[in-house]
Length: 221
Image (cartoon, rainbow, N blue to C red; front, side):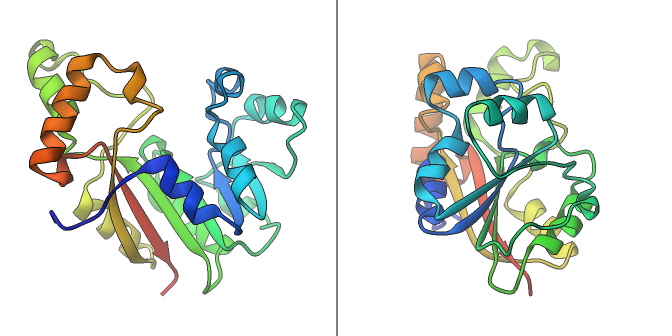
């Protein structure tokens, strides 16, 4: 485990998207679409500068309308747990599902449905928070008020680890081709209290598998 690569999440996704035909799931970052557009941090815009062709898919029509109002094209409104209702618009080289699987009530439905968008050449990259993140564990231990105050996004319903996410994707007839941990990036580090960054850096120095999140690259068998 300690030998698995530790990368910057956004930098890795941009590198993997370069020159590719990309489908970006969860493209709006709703409800923070307008704020992300205003400060230039919206990942979909950064992917557009790297990819040869970029499509965005999200369930949040309001966020899609905001993007469309900024002149962004090739947008699809769809529920990730009901992708059987959507006809894939193209054959994609790369499908990105960044920080979405932990929001889903039925991730197996998503993994089954996304296969319709894949060919034997398509790569599916999932990113998600790490169940064993040292920073969140220590913050919870020190400031959790007996367990009632948890450092978790209010819309998250699951945590995943190296083993559990591998088992999940393999149960749904996908194979894991690459696995990495991602460290705190510019989307989180500047907003954190200094002690959280200090705890994170200490934990990662001791053991990279205590990093902020996971990056899993999957493909059809």
